[in-house]
Image (tube, rainbow, N blue to C red; front, side):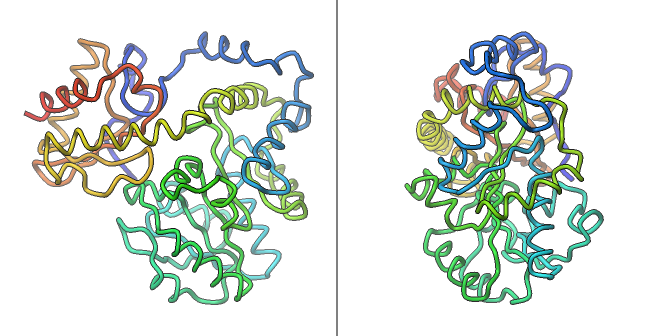
Length: 360
């Protein structure tokens, strides 16, 4: 697992200015946002049934070019359900995942301990998948899981031709592709493709509602109608039948109206900010090419020193910089920037000046 400054640090609640993702909201601000949603006057949902959930599922299905979509309160529930169902449909028990995928790194081996699935690791650490990685895949797979982008590998994305090759490889062998598209909407800008074209690479696809769409929580799994209906019992078995999910659903509808149109803007802002950082600190400041609205920055300062200085800045000036800091040796460290509306409060030059002060 990863160490460093994490979301929820006590000092974070005292801050008023942020860098990465969207500006965090307190309880009152969440309630105010939800109250703005026109659908607030519709009938409330109960146990995943209601007009607002149906509306949300239909909107996401249309956005992704899929027949049907299913709301889940947690992405891990939706993705585990999809993998279990693909396994059951094909009577196979091995999936292919990237070694730095969310499934491999952040779910405490759920694929093994919970799902009883084996894994075939494909792709190299800190790299997107290549044609050679695909060519080495076995043919007895229940599913090929494709995380777009692969966050822990530095928000890496493969080339479009590689995705087309993977789709053809899987189709000829009867292997379904499941897309872990928690950040798929941001990734689409890199290839300059419609969301439906990217989602079309997969037989099933998960998208997060709380990342760039800024909902309180939740996600959606989309695919063909028959397959999505097969996931409904799995959602129940995994504790996904919430009594009501209206804060998740209404805030997601808010995000579709307000954040979805801004995704290309966030994409361009990430490029501009990365260029400013590179110009000031040199090429080594960006360990990987910037491909979507999330990227890694590397500074010539130890993680311990940067953490201490960042916490002091939060305490004295109410500025929160990082979700986590990743050590890279004794005198170097990395952190993420994910462009969202938090950057509305910054000029790129001012932010780069601050990072330079912290790294001295």
